[in-house]
Length: 346
Ligand code: GTP
Image: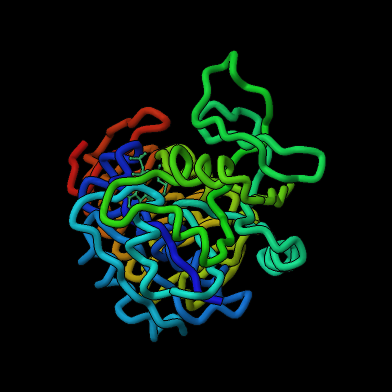
C-alpha cells in the first residue's frame, strides 16, 4: 500500500517554534518528527509515501530528499496555496491513483495497529475507515459518532462544551478506497472533516470507525510537543536519535564533554558535541540537541533544547522548550512552560 501524509499546515498553535520550521519536522527526541511516521508506515510494508506539502516545502525536502536514506520513496505534492485537508489529498491523487491508500495527519503520534486496521477495512469493504481514539477533553478535536455496528453516522468538528456527546475523536489515521477521491473537487480548498466526510455520508457510503484505546497524541501545541518527549523517553516509542553510548538511561551523542562533578540522570538525550560544564545537571526527561552548552551549576529538567542552545551559569530550566541557538544568560530564571523561538535571548 502507498501512503499520503498531510504536512501542509502552518502550525500556528506551535509558534514561535514553527515560525522558521514546519511543525512536521520539529525535532522530537533528536530526530525530525516525520521520521516516526515513516517508521510507522514502514512497519506495514509501505514503500512509497506522498508528502502533501504547502508550508516551507524546501525545509522538508532538505531533510528527507527522495526518501532513500529512510528506506522509502518519497513524492512531493506541492500546493501553491493551502488546499485544506481534502483538497490536499486530491492534489496528491496522481501518485496513488487506482489503489487504496493510508492517510496520516502529519502531526500525530500513535500506536494504532495499522495492520489490524487494514484487515478491518478489507473485511468490511467500506469506502473509508477512520482511526478513532478516546480522549478526556474532546473539545479541541473532531468528534465522530458511530452506530452499533461501528459505522460513522455523524461528525462534529471542535464542538462547544454543551455539544459533546462522545469522547471518540478522529485520530487523523485513515484508509481510503480510490472512489473517495471522486468526492473531492480539484484545485480548490476543501476540508475532509467539513466537506468530504459529510458528502460521503450524504451519499450513503459506508465509513467504518476503527476505535483504538492505546497511545495517541497530536504534537500541535508546545505543551503537547514537550510531553510527547516524556512519553517517548518512558518507552512509548523507540528513540531513533543516533547515540554512541547509553548509560543510566542517558542516550549520548558523539563528542559530548562532561565537566567535573556534572550530574546526568536519565531518561534523557544529549546530542552530539554538547558541553555540560562543571557542576551542571541534566536531569530526567531532558532532551538536548546538537552542540548545546550548559554552563557551571545550571540544571535542565523535563525540557527540550534544540540545536546550539547556550545556557549560562546558575540557570535552572524546568519544563521549557528553547528553539535553535537560543541564549539564556547567567542567573536567569524562566517560568515553567516558557517557549522561546530560534535565536531568542533571555
Ligand atoms: P494549526 O495552525 O496550529 O492549527 O496547525 P495546522 O496548520 O498544522 O493545522 P491542523 O493541526 O488542523 O492540521 C492537521 C494536519 O493536516 C497537519 O498535519 C497539517 O500539516 C495538515 N494540513 C492542514 N491544512 C493543510 C493544507 O491546507 N494542506 C496540506 N497539505 N496539509 C494540511
